[in-house]
Structure formats: structure tokens, C-alpha cells
Length: 353
Ligand SMILES: [Zn+2]
Image 1 (cartoon, protein in one colour):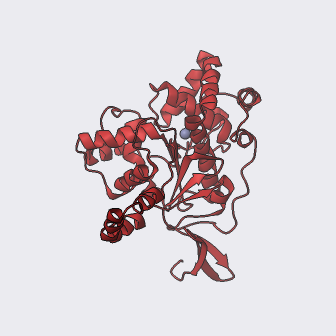
Image 2: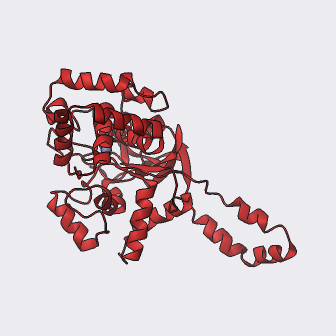
């Protein structure tokens, strides 16, 4: 999802993610209990095993509402509660999100860059600059299917592209999920913490948009429905959406990307900063007619209620977030309201002006 501050056509660019695989490796331990030799091995390598186990990235489970109500001070990974083949990465800042996923974005779907090779640092910097963006603003949210991420990392390795620590972390996460293999049904969606140009309300808009992409990747009947909807549009309507998406930096030659983003913006991005009727040269009435048509025939599954449900009111406890933490004003004090893996935590902070 892409957002362009100060521009009415602001768009949230949201990416796809792969399916989840259980992480706990209990089978390794119980297999070791079968024989004396295995016990000896387990003893010998116990420290090594625990060390490896300790490095597993924690993955929780969260609903949309839970994510909306919290604010990450570190990168948080959760399975999306209604569909655990969708994994949500909640980044503490736009910068950390961009460092992790901008190279993937270029590879999978950005305009004016090749999709058959992975960009090195210099080429990526040039591509981001040429698009008028920064690492932080290249996308405001991301979404990728498992297969595209696996393809990215395989190609990066074969082309000997040097990846940054954030990208290597993502590769570790995918390995842990089992998503670097072929045939996985899964998707990763991402959003940044509120802060800077990202308001708490915008964070909710980004998440709703990205969730729709998650469904597109992991629920075949929804993907087929979206394809049918796209085919049912007039050539002029398809051109209107394609033009809008091209102005947001998407590669318009990718038909699946066009129809996926169309469902996300038209139905699940009810914020004029990101999408509005004028952005596609239509009236509100015309856009509403398209929306009604889509929603009326949408297959009934976990995403369906979100097509019409308003976003919840943004939490009062996270107004402007100046750095990577939400600030809660209590009387004259300002407190950091941070979401850690164990839950919310409040800490007094004296350095905020
Ligand atoms: Zn999108």
C-alpha cells in the first residue's frame, strides 16, 4: 500500500504473504528419546539445540482488532486469527518495514524495474529515487504470496545479491514457517507502527487493505471471484483502475496485480487519502455502484464482513507517535505505550518535547 503525503490520490500499497507452518520442533526432541545412542547425541548437542531453539522468531495469533489496538515497539509477527495461512508482520517504523521489503517490492510488482532478477543495493536505491520515494515511503504496507517470496530469495542467492540484516531476518522467518519450499499456500502482509506521517487511523486503513490481499492469496474462491469481477468490468473501467494504479507505482503490465489491487482499494480502503472516486475519474455514485455489485455477490467467508464493517475508532492511547513508540499523555506526563511480545507495557519517557 502506498501513501503519498499531501496528495489526494494517496494510495496504500499492500503486499502478499505465504502460508504458515508450525514452528515448534518437538519431533526432533522426541525422536532423540528412542535409543541410548540418540540420548547421548541429545546430551552432546543439547546446548546447540537449545541455542537454535532460542533463536526461533516468536509468532503469536491476533485478530484485526487486536492489531489495531496495539502498537509495536519491535517487530511483531502473528498469524491472522481467522486465517492462519496469513502472517502479519507489524513493524516498529516505516523505515524498518522498507529495509525488510523494498527490494522484494521492486522484484514482485513495482513499475520500471525488472521482475526476473533481484536488484543490488545501488540499483534499488536508484529505483526508489527514480520513483520519487524513500526507503520508508516506497510502500506503506506490503503483501506477498509465499511463492513470490521463495522465488525472490532463491534468485537472490543464485545471483549472489548481498542482502541486508532485515532481509536475512525475513528469510529466517520464511524458513521457520516452511515457506521457502514449493507448493505452500500462504501470504505475508505488513504494516508500520503509527508515527510520523502514519496516524493511528492510517495504520488501521493499511491493515484492512492488506488483509484483503491476504485473502486474495490464500482463499482460491475469493481470488476467482475477483478475477470474474475484473473480467466483468468495461474496458473503460479497467483502464481507469489501471491508470490509478500506474500512478501509484504499480507495474500495470501485471494483470493479477491490477485486479488484486482493485478489490483492495475499491472495497477495503475506505479512506479518501488512499482512494477516492476522483482518483479513477468517476463520481461517488458510480464508485458506489461498483462496490455494491462486488459486495452483493462476494463469496461468504471470513473476509466478507470486513467489506462493509467500518474500521474501529482509533485508540486514544496512541496519538502522534514521534519515534517508534506510541505516546500516551497522562496529565502532564507522557508515557510510552508499547506492545511487546508479552503484551502492552507502559514506561515513562522524559525526552519527548
Ligand atoms: Zn494493495
